[in-house]
Length: 84
Image (tube, rainbow, N blue to C red; front, side):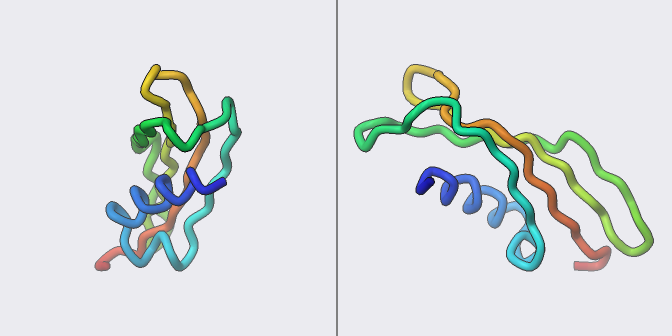
C-alpha cells in the first residue's frame, strides 16, 4: 500500500490543496511491488466536467515497475473550485 503514496504525491503536485480536501482514489493492485523495484507513476486527465463553480476531474493513474509491468491501475477524482 505504500506505493499509493507515490500516486498521492503526483496528484498533490498537480491539484494542490484540492487533492487533500476531497480527492478520491480507487485502484486495483495488479502485481506486487518489491523493495528493489523502480516504480514509475503516471496519470492523465480522462474528463473534466463543470458543475456550478467547480471543475470535476477524473484521472487515470498507473504504477509500473522497471519491467513495465502494471503494479497498480485505477482512477482518481478531484474537485477544484474555480478561482483557486
